[in-house]
Length: 113
Image (cartoon, rainbow, N blue to C red; front, side, top):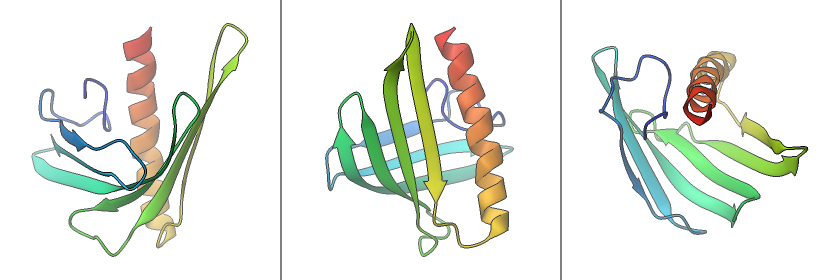
């Protein structure tokens, strides 16, 4: 929760309910730019230390479900993370999520440094 979300997330506003198992649900909420945001979905694949696949839908548009796949593997002295978010309803949604995920991953990199 310390690094989740785009750069505009208000510090201390992230809340998460997670049932990390195949079929388990998650819900994450946060404030950004004065707005409340909530996203959730279902875990479809959980392979510890290797792969995580889950659905992704904003509370405000639950019919616009997409799919996130995260894979990690050792590489040299570090770890390679492969991130894929697919099945967007349109290019605008894709581009908006790309900006958000890019900012989130930058925050994660700073957090791990």
